Image (cartoon, rainbow, N blue to C red):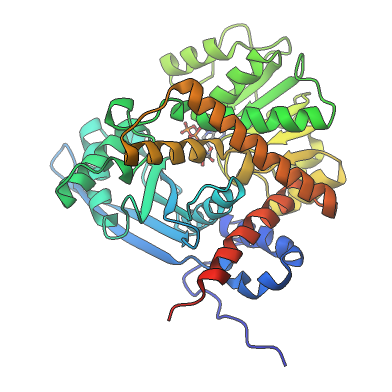
Length: 428
Ligand code: NAD
C-alpha cells in the first residue's frame, strides 16, 4: 500500500496556463530521472515560505493607496534564498511562487550556493512619481524585512526594477538593522557595492549559452537571423552581443510594438530610440508589424525576453527558428514545448539560459562579503566559465537520456537540490 500523498496547497488557484502549473508540469517531467531521490520530490512542489504584505503609501496628492506585495522562498536547502523583485500590475502569488521555484532550479543548474526566492508588487510603476516609487519600495522592504537578509534571502532586480530601487532596498534594510548591509541585495549601483558586469550579465549569459548550443547544432552565428521579444535589460544586451558576433537582428518586439528589417536592425540605435521615445515603435528604416506577425518572422534564432506564457502551442507550430533562447522566465507553455520537440527546434531553457544574472549576483554577494572587488574582465571570464561548464553538464545529460535540454537541466538541478535535502534530513 502506498503512503498517502501530501495535501494539495489550499492557497493556489488552479488555472491550467498559470506559471505555477507550468512549473509543476516541468517538475513532473523530471521525476522519472530522479531515482531514489524522488522520495523527496514533494519538496519541489510547494514553497517553503510565502509572505503576503500590505504596502500602504501616501501619494503625492495626499491620498493613501495600498499595494499588494509578496516574497516567496521556494527552497533554501542549498543556501540562502535568491531571486529578483518584480513591479507589474499582473503580479500574483501564483506567479511569484513559480518565479521563486524557477530560481531554485536555476541556482542549482549553475551550481551557485543559493536556494530560490522571488518577490513582487502588484503595481504599474509607470503611474508613480519617483518619490512614490521610493516610498513604496522602502515600505515593501521593511515589510519583507522579516525574512530577507544577506544570509537568509537576497533580492535583486527583475521586470521594472533597477539599481536605484536596489539602492533604496539596501538603505532601508540597513536603517532597520542599524548597520550598512550591502550584501542584502544584488544589482546595486557600483559605488554601493554593486558588481561590474551585473547589468549586462543576463543578456551575456543568453549569448554564451546560445553560442554554445548553436555550435553543437551546426548553426553559424555569422549572418544568422535573430528575433527578440522584449527589449529591456535582457533582450537588448543579448541582441547587442549577437549582432557583435555577426548575427542579424531582424525583428524586435516590446510592449509598444514590433519593428522588422530583414537586412538587420542596429541594436545600439534601437536602445537609444527606445530610451528617447519610451518604446520601439517608429524606429526609422524599419517596418512596423502587427504583434502576432512577430511569430512568423523568418529567423534562425528566437529570443523570448519579455514575460511568461508567450510561446503557445499555436505560435510554436509556426516558428521558423532552429534555436529558441529563453531570456525570459517561463516564456514557453509545456504543450508548446512538446510542439518544439516534435519539430526538432532546440530550446535552451530559462533555468540555464538566463542564469547569467544570478551568477554575477553571486559574484556581487561574494565581493560584498570580502569587500574586495574584481575587474569587469575577471567577472566576464568567470561568468563564461560557469555558464559553459553548466551547459556542458546539461548537454551531456540530455544526450545520455535522449531528453530535451529543459528536462536535462531540471534533472541536474533537482538532483542537486534533493541531494542537499536528503543529506540535511528533516527537522526535527
Ligand atoms: P525589463 O523591464 O528591462 O524589460 C522587459 C521588456 O519586455 C520591455 O522591453 C517591455 O517593453 C517588454 N514587454 C513587456 N510586456 C510585453 C509584451 N506583452 N509583449 C512584448 N514585449 C513586452 O525586464 P528584464 O529585466 O529585461 O526581464 C525580462 C525577462 O527576463 C523577465 O521574464 C525576467 O524575469 C527575466 N529575467 C531577467 C533577469 C535580469 O537580470 N534582469 C534575469 C533573469 C531573468
